[in-house]
Image 1 (cartoon, rainbow, N blue to C red):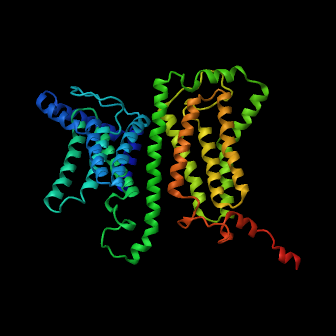
Image 2 (image 1 turned 90 degrees about the vertical axis):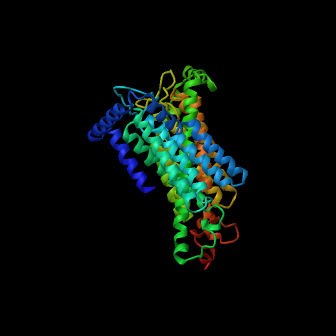
Length: 465
């Protein structure tokens, strides 16, 4: 997985910066291979038949059938692994193509036509992810010897043939296919680490009859943390796909009428007042990057002071980093113009979807409420629900009032925050202490949030003496 990630990162940077030697090699290979197949209709037909095996229809037929077999055998984890891994390829391909923006090859004798951008190759990425996931699931159940070797090498040759067919047809460069293979290996490794499909029926992820060794026991926490991180990254990719998909749906089919996208910003613009302008500006500033950063750092410091565990701090950090990266990626892909009203803010990015203010506010204040309510003991902890509810409502009204966002931009941010907070809470477990639930009141009181506060106060008995 590490090697694939490194190779993909190098190719991504080289393609994005249009590195001269790579561009020259890609164009030269495209021209030479096009000259080999041009004028041979039978050969082109065979190549197109091979490339069809990497199309979405063929891949999802294989993947869906494999998942159905696992579900029929009540192997729900393996069925989920297949579907999640395949869905990740559907997300990564269009998002990366939009972010990189590389045009497809132009050859002298075109024999096929490709739509969209070029890097990475969608057929190559989908084939290595889908067929690779099927291989990981069914390989342990295959008899050792020639059946297992046939399955392994057959799928490997099929993946290679699909990638090469895309270059021969002149619809992708060599680096498009190589980058897709590297990315596919990384995604396969990430999802395999998150789901551990090879060891699904044994406790602790160990094969049957495997003795416990001290080294294995010592390595278990590191592997557990690695699986949590892999699960968080996997969830982030899938949630990004949901948010981008909703944004593309809104842009293409809403015609600025869903949820009053046209009417509500115009109504706010027509009813602006000096006091409303002032208060909306204060709310927007409080929930902008600087305000969110100050509150997040202060919350983390308080968690370290009173709770004295790393999980709440890591939880808040992961939630906010995931929000920022998802916002930047979604805005770059969807590229939705802002409402056609007078904007009270200036020097803002041109993309309106999703609302960064709304997503950051929801993620931060709800994350703080989750941690405090989970660790504190006492009625006052429920007061944290007030900012967790009031702040998102205020920032939503403020951003629409100032003409910066449509209601569906706000809805996209709410969808992201709901999914992202749910995933990170379930995976990171910010209210667990060393892997266990937070202690109850009356048992180890000093380990709770309230107990830490009380322990800092001077003892009454000492004061009386």
